[in-house]
Amino acid sequence: MQHSPQDLRKKILGRQGEELTCKYLKQHGYKIISRNYKTPFGEADIVAYKEDTYCFVEVKTRESDSFGLPAEAVDKNKRRRYRQIAGYFCARRKEEVPVRFDIASIYEGQLEYFEDAYI
Image (cartoon, rainbow, N blue to C red; front, side, top):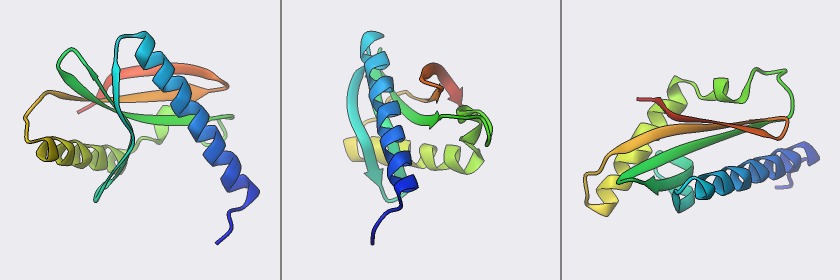
């Protein structure tokens, strides 16, 4: 199945957002554990580690605010999936560690990072 040019553009934009976020995280002392971490519950864009805490980062990148700001797209279903992904991650590692859920919101090329964005 072929993807439309719009689908390809979204994929490229998303990858650029993830690259920008990883760069930001590394500059702020995080270790990147995984990118595009796939589980039966879905995919986490980035799993990072800092100060004994695993951070599950949803990256939202937008070029316009026609559909709202990027961070607003992380709805209750997305938050629920991320909690399931974190549980799966910890169970696979056989360790109980603090986890945190962050959002990287990229709008017009500018990154705004929300630590501990939700529970």
